[in-house]
Length: 267
Image 1: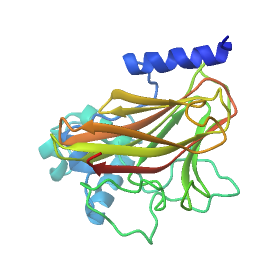
Image 2 (image 1 turned 45 degrees about the horizontal axis):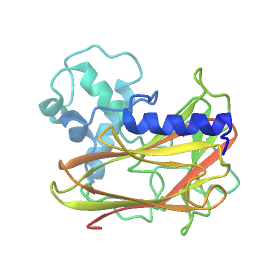
Image 3 (image 1 turned 90 degrees about the vertical axis):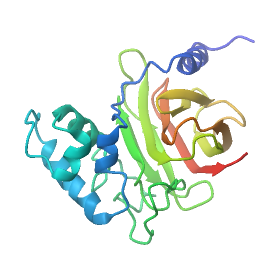
């Protein structure tokens, strides 16, 4: 069987992704004690305090080493780089300006008033029925994201659109991530549904704490145009995991979606 040039490029990208995980132009935060001090909380008052601080702090290049809120300096010290890193990837009060709207979108904020808060130790909002929060969405190279309706089984799904020119090496990128706390030594199953509208669209990679674990290509399983189920079984090696879904596109005018992301103990 002769592979098309675009399909060959996709396969090589997938192999390279799993082998090294080196390519990523999407900005990521350092998941350290400073980040945890600012954001991993279900206390609305403390979250609002962190959001207010970061909204001001990130308006310009920060070099000051004093004047930080006392609750933050215990974990962050006086390093401007630590505060900048945590603020750059923390949840914001409103949806990102890079979000797009469609005729199906009905929510524009990161939280929904009908969703009750849950402890940060619990994996949250895998069906996107409560907006984006606590997920963090990052896009680059002509890529935009939105919540689209309907989802695979619920009202919403997370959608990425590669709708402009690719970057200098022929890629478009987006990233969706959530920080969670789990029990070391315990086996977990991460499951999710994926969708591509075209067979040469690219792939979605999954990373745990920055390390590649899994990829699903646009033409894998049942192929494009339908939802596909994916499962990853792993044993936790640490109590803190940054779960990332990285979208890499090999062509323009592609729609990719995620829905029904679930993390459960056992197989």
